[in-house]
Image 1 (cartoon, rainbow, N blue to C red):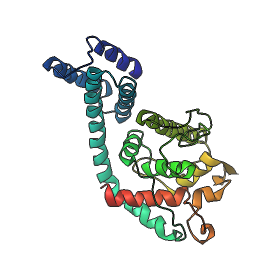
Image 2 (image 1 turned 180 degrees about the vertical axis):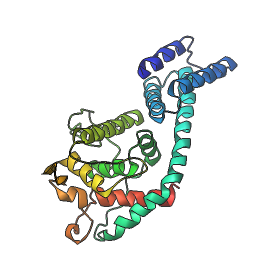
Image 3 (image 1 turned 60 degrees about the vertical axis):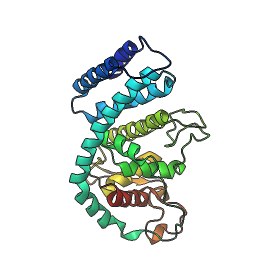
Length: 278
């Protein structure tokens, strides 16, 4: 429904387009009306606001040569992302102490042997905003992407995208902002579907503001392959088939790695967030 509503009023916008364009008073007034309509449709649902934002960014790339349409699209997506980011800042403020406590609890076992540049925070603001809108940990998105494809801004040759989702075919080569946003949404949806699939066995609580060490291990196990053991009496646990995928660079047992695993990379991203984004 959200996509249909978006397309309906965007089709209406196409009437009267011209190649050489400067906003008129009527355009400004129409944008104001459309902003109000979007606010009415989305209310305070950050996920809905983000979904509209993603659609507008896609349309902007597809119709980049239409100047008048791009004025409308640009004004609308700025309005939406501003609202998302305003609420995100509030959420960051209220969750900082808990995140700092989590980092302090688990950050004492980093391996010192890894010398590769600690990158993967390009596009941080975009990744952080989509994570907030989907109530998903930003650092987990970044650390999974880092482990899968080292965070280069391109489509890998196997076509599975920056998060290496085997069921997807994104093509290869260059990647646009709109396509990158799509791959991030696919990653979040894919991960949450995994959690839901095993909800009767595994307790996985991972949100934008709260996470557990066990939940992160379970994410790594379900994402890269794991073994679920246990029973309804003693409980179930998920163990990564490849523990290094989760733990490389964390503690003596996993020292000597050249690349961080999901968990230590998560902590390093979290440390950066706490130091630079609050």
